[in-house]
Amino acid sequence: MAKRLAMVIDASKCIDCKGCMVSCKVANGVPQDKWRNWIKPTEPEFGPGRRPSVRFQPGGCMHCEKPTCVSACPTGATYKDADTGEVVIDAALCIGCGNCIPACPYDARYRNPETKKADKCNYCPERRAAGLLPACVDTCPTKARVFGDLNDPDSEASKVYKANKDRVQVVINEKTDTKPNMYYIGSPGNTRWTRPAVVPASMTAMKEAAPLVKGLVGLTGLGVLAMLGRQLFAGSTDKHEEEDRHG
Image (cartoon, rainbow, N blue to C red; front, side, top):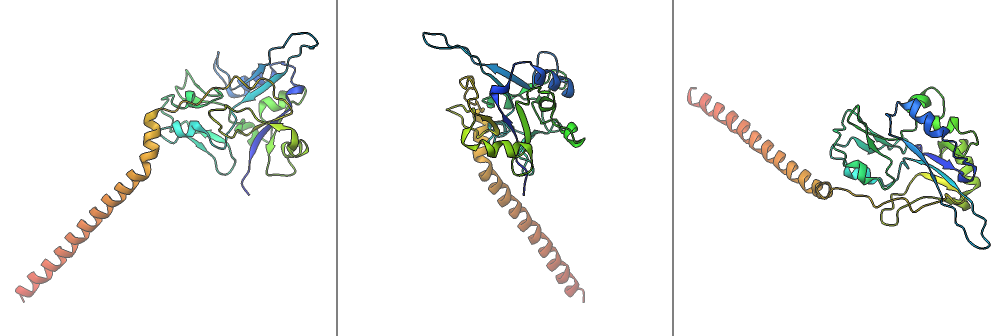
């Protein structure tokens, strides 16, 4: 069975220490003024009979089931990994066009000013390869963030998710539901900060025309093969006729 890597977060445990943000920056060499993750506060509401409170919402790339960033990428550099469920950026294929940045409703991507490539949270693959948790999860002092494979019943994330399944919520934009894979236990706090995804019209047209283009290319290929076969057959026939004429 394929993996389903995801974050499960209890926002009520977040104390806004920024440890997750700093550790991510250090572990992944994130440039100055850029961030792969964040903590968004909820503005307290004051009024008669109300006890003002603030909830802090840890976040990052949602590694969505239906990622609009993938639709916006012209080279296939951004793709959904079928084996892990992650949304991955292949730096070798990224041309730094920036199409994917406004296509993310969570503003989870940025263009690295040093590499000129798109960048975002990737669950710290180097740390995972060494048997460690992503930096943000490892650093959290209250363990507000839990990471793991939701398809593995023995993973911590799977256990927390199943134990709180009736309370799980996600943060989505009402105009662009990308089916995010970041789950919050209970109230996540403010959910109004997202924005509709903006995918270039040229990319939308290209994706829609892709099946037709493939069909035309296929027909063209068949035509070329037919012409080549005819020439080979004709050449073979001419050779035999020539041999017949000369005995």
